[in-house]
Length: 197
Image 1: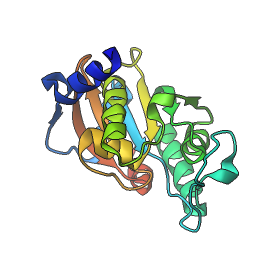
Image 2: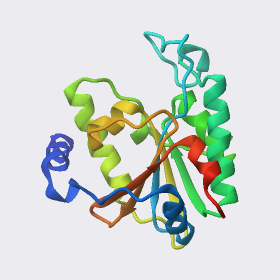
Image 3: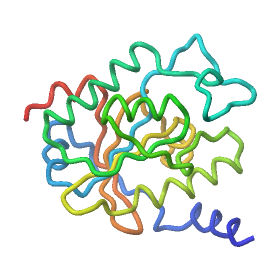
């Protein structure tokens, strides 16, 4: 009962509302990220279109899931290389337990922590409310000083929370403010390599 009430509050609370500024271009975003204090939300990199999730997905068995395509693996590495070359400090890398999300994190950052709050949800209204209630606090949470937090999740979770779907592998940058957050801009995988250190 308490959890249901929390979901309803999170769904309608003005503190959970998204304040969005005019989009900042990638080069300037990278400059901000170097200072730390931001959340980088990434939709997992490109999945293999010839695969589908099984009716019964086992999170410990990647053969029951749609996995990253060759391009998805390339894009994941591009993300990590671009962030590294741009000298952007990353602390926590949190991911959905699905293999395509975890692999995005491993290939980009060589490390990733599974967080069930970022787990894939269906299009059911109840699931979307749960996704929004779970993702909103993570977008609002302040990173450790001088660092940035990375979140890796799925299109349905992002759509439920933000009202749009980024491209696969696209990063959306947020300024967390403790009980709310501001969306600053977006960076596609190929754009990371265009950022000048």
